[in-house]
Image (cartoon, rainbow, N blue to C red):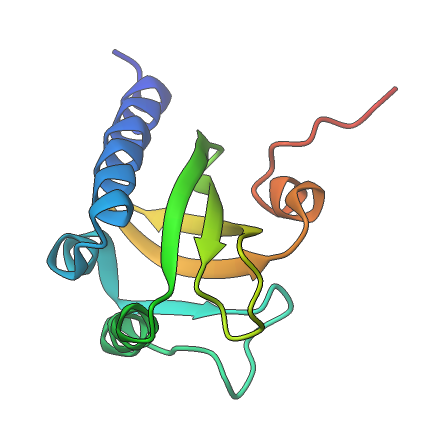
Length: 135
């Protein structure tokens, strides 16, 4: 098996683990997916509000769960060293019943090193390297 085929297989395995962890809101499983130096924030980050390590990411997720925020995975698409994660989020502060959101997870080895949040799937797919240029 070629190295890029192994990488795709590993990314698929990581995607399966991530889907299970997100679906169960399992913070211990999420901790295993995140690199110690994992970051999370806006697409244009880094910014002052970014989470700057695994503990801050897990703390944010824990706080959101405690506040009643829930996320249902709608899609998980492997890219080239990335995962496009689609989520249906409920329990948001603005009172909406459900919002579609996307995240792009950048992978190094078998760990998530960067998470960027998007309100637009097209922008997220482009960031994940999933959009093909038109000719």
